[in-house]
Length: 239
Ligand SMILES: Nc1ncnc2c1ncn2[C@@H]1O[C@H](COP(=O)(O)OP(=O)(O)OP(=O)(O)O)[C@@H](O)[C@H]1O
Ligand SMILES: [Mg+2]
Image (cartoon, rainbow, N blue to C red; front, side, top):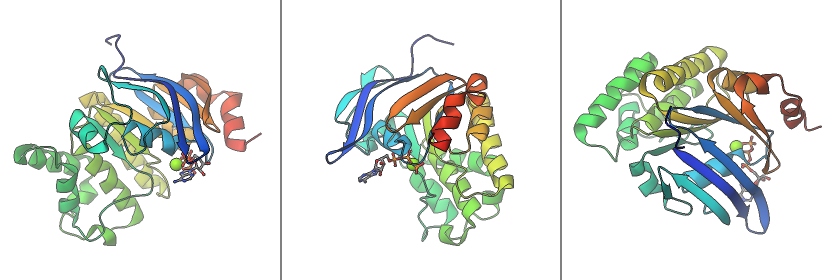
């Protein structure tokens, strides 16, 4: 593994008005690594991803992606540079078909790459292949989440960030989504940052993890170590 991180975050501070949500986060990802971000509701996980994908301008700190400081840069440009963010809560376009949602996800790519991307989505998610012309709003919740993940892959990201991909999804679909993510990480070397409430599921996939507690990093380490760490328990039980 090369020894230059693809993403290096230092001293990241974010706020909503006067209220600080992140108090100086340091985090780094090596190319090809899968890293989990865990923590209780309101810990700042979504805020962190929003800063990294350019949806929220940080108050302070550096976000170096592929050698450039991207803190505060607009989201559109970051997609073209290789950062993809699958937001929390299945944000598909309900009035568009499955195929159209995928095409929108591939807006930075040419026609050939888009066609390839749709084929790849069908391979990872056969259920979507059967529903290409169905309106996304009529898909089941789990199918919408698969579509959200598949759409996030359409830009051929080098860094894929996922915000609670298992939220509200039945166990069988959770398994389909996490199996696909494992294949994509292994076969394509896509670097991933995965926010999850289901710590076991995330740490099973991830190489390393970070635990956020009220806007600060409480603990970090290899996935196997975190699975048995008391701090992780505390972060979830709030004690
Ligand atoms: N748009 C906003 N305006 C004001 N405060 C916000 C806004 N979004 C988030 N916050 C606050 O910032 C803090 C962190 O929120 P964030 O959504 O990042 O948490 P989270 O870890 O993703 O939680 P969850 O697990 O519930 O998704 C919370 O205290 C939240 O109330
Ligand atoms: Mg969140």
